[in-house]
Length: 164
Ligand SMILES: [Zn+2]
Image (cartoon, rainbow, N blue to C red; front, top):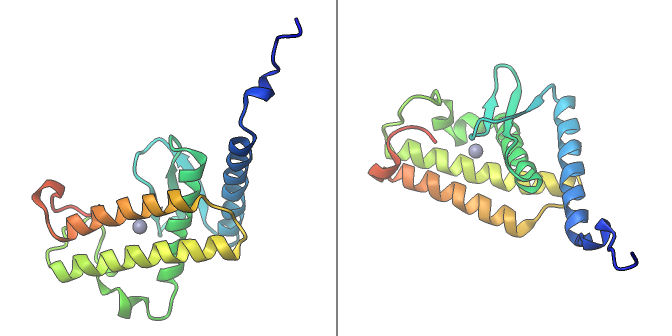
C-alpha cells in the first residue's frame, strides 16, 4: 500500500508549470485581442486563419498550448502591422487578395518580408504583455514558416502557386 505513488509525483513540475504558463498566456492574449474587438476561435482546421472582415482569428486547436500561443501572437503581429501608418507603403503586396496567385517574385518576397515582420512583432508583444514563451520553440516555428514562404516565393514547383 505504501509503495503506491501518487499520480502527481510522476509529473514533471517544470512541464506542468510551462503548460500552465502557455494556457494563461493564451488567455491573456485573447483578452488583449478582445479589447481590440477581435475574437479567437479554436478550430480543427489545420491552417490558422486571420479574418479581417469579421475580426476573427482561427487557431488550430489540435496543436499544443505552446504552439497555439506562438501562432496567436504571430497572427496579432499581422493585425498590428496592418494598423501601422506605413503598412501600404512597406507591404504593397499584402493588399493583394490572399487567394489570388501572386505572379511577381518581388510581390512574393514582399509578403515574405511582411511575414518576417509579423514574427518580430509577435516577439515584442509577448515581451510587452509579460508573457513567457518557449523561445526555442518560437524560433523553430518561425523558421519553418518563413522557410515555407521563402520556397513559395522562389516558386519551387513543389510548393505550387497558391498563397500559403
Ligand atoms: Zn503570417
